[in-house]
Amino acid sequence: MQDNTIVIQAPAVASKRSTREWQQADAAHFLHPFTDFGALAKKGSRIITKAEGIYLWDSEGKKILDAMSGLWCVNVGYGQNSLVEAATRQMKELPFYNAFFQTATPPAIELAELLAEVTPPNFQHVFFAGSGSEGNDTVVRMVRRYWDILGQPERKVIISRKNGYHGSTMAGASLGGMSYMHAQGGLPIPDITHIDQPYWHEHGHGMDKAEFGKVAASWLEKRILEVGADKVAAFIGEPVQGAGGVIVPPATYWPEIQRICDKYGVLIVSDEVICGFGRTGNWFGCETQGFKPDLMTFAKGVTSGYIPLGGVMVGDRMAKVLIEQGGDFNHGYTYSGHPVASAVAVANIKLIQQLKLVEHVRDDVGPYLAQQFASLKDHPLVGDTETCGLMGAILLVKDKAKNTAFPAEIDIGMVCRGHCFGNGLIMRAVGDRMIIAPPLVMNRAQMDEMMSLIRRCLDLTLADATRNGWL
Ligand SMILES: *Cc1c(COP(=O)(O)O)cnc(C)c1O
Image (cartoon, rainbow, N blue to C red; front, side):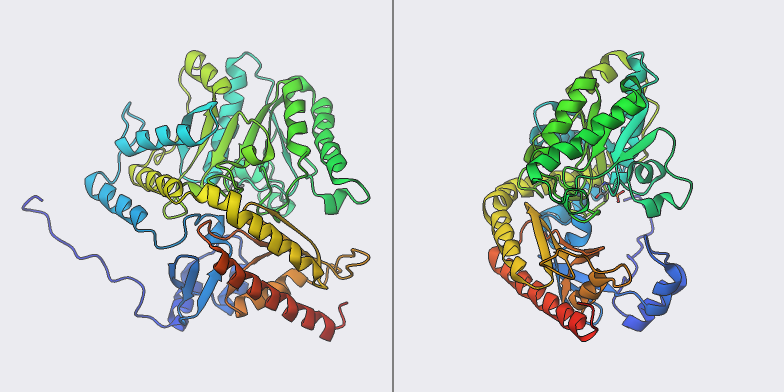
């Protein structure tokens, strides 16, 4: 350290204030994502202060089982020292350097190499970003650039799906199929079009599930022909829709999507931001769902959320063209290949390998969750359950026998979610679907604990429904 350097103590952080004081400061200054600012300011945020394993604690000292892995990201669970040490070491050695000036840093190179190792064999290259949304912005730029280089600049249209989630930047929200997002800000941007999702409960009634999978895939072919095959650049989808409500497509869906894309030369983009890094019982969701994408967007589980990082894996078909014929690609982010984020990602991926978390999900807790969720179908409120690896959904219905939904004015999901909050469980509500995606380190005993909390919350929701005459 140089003589003129003043040593400044790190500021004291969090801890000394009461819950009320935190809430007041929060309401005064912090605009939260996807939130009614005014309503939250009145109600007050829940202040989360620490975490360990699969549990969180709030500022009142209440322990909460985190069945959402933060926001689908804390795959290795909280409190993993190897990630903390990797960040600390890298911050001391080289906290930042860019990759613009024909320069690179060892952690970013090491991460690129490790990603090539854990992704399917046709992925040998990566473009780094800071988040999943930025990754999908890169997807739009890269897909269109690819077709430009090949002399087909009219191939611009990207086909996506309703109720899909691809992030919240202009491109991410446009690719996404959330109508309430499109309604704000003049979206989608041009040359993005959406087809219906492969959701059997919405579109497939009376149809065999395998048959429905092929029908849902045929909507893609129909749209390709409507747009004109020579104008379609790519199709993008999540292997299993996450934020849309953990919608697991029939096993016939993705192979048929692959066949259609191959037929018309359309690129396939797998948004692996949730499904990647072991969530579905394979390293990547496309392996579970049986298709071979040209690009894969990743974020969340790549660092288990310990630090922001995202990016796009670029398959050989596109990499060859971009590298050999592309010239400059005029795109990138200050934090593309951030050394600290990369070092944490390397530690995280190595930990997933050492703990054999992918196998743990595939062979042990994934099948166990499937069995446990299936057993919920005897509950009067549960119309159906679905799981894929360590993600799952519970569909709440008004009348099981007739499979009728609750009317729109009764937000049964929010009622159930309220009971979850009250009983120390974080389970999310998407319409009438209660969804979970717990940390991959969860063991069977912890899953039993989660299931008993889920049953209790379903019972409390049923009691409300009975008392209020909703059934
Ligand atoms: C969360 C998510 C994104 C966006 O990632 P951010 O890091 O929030 O920008 C994109 N795609 C999917 C499938 C996601 O779940």
